[in-house]
Length: 221
Image (cartoon, rainbow, N blue to C red; front, top):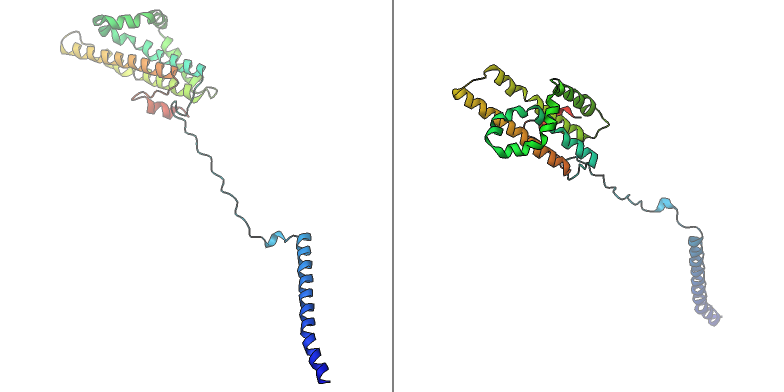
């Protein structure tokens, strides 16, 4: 009897261990099948943060770097700078008589200047046309409207030397020398503005004339 009991105790642990191992393998196999059949719920996943979307950079319209103008816009913008020059060419009467190179430079423009000066109100009509049909016309690009406004402001500034000449009008002496210097300075400024403004526009750049550029910026929206 004692021998049978001892034999049972020796055999029982092995049987129990084998049974436990078999059950563990069966559970593992069942769990693996369950996992493959039913994937884990998305709710148990760790949420991933969305990638950061870069904000679009703001576009700054400046001269040729970003503000591009097509060929018609360049041509129109270059042409408008002839308006203040034609309107103020009379201020070059002293410098043109003293320096022949300036005469050769202006000679090709003489027919157009005569047509412009043929009617007393041509300057005023051109002013109204450029301001209301170009500057205030949103169909034109800002490039054209800004250059047109610069030409208009430059022409408006010619009122001041005209008033001084009409008020004082000295015939000789120091007063005449001052008047000659003033007129020559105005003419040279108009000539430089014409050359700089027109050439810059033809090249696609945005010219900014001293004195008048800030006023033109405020008028062109």
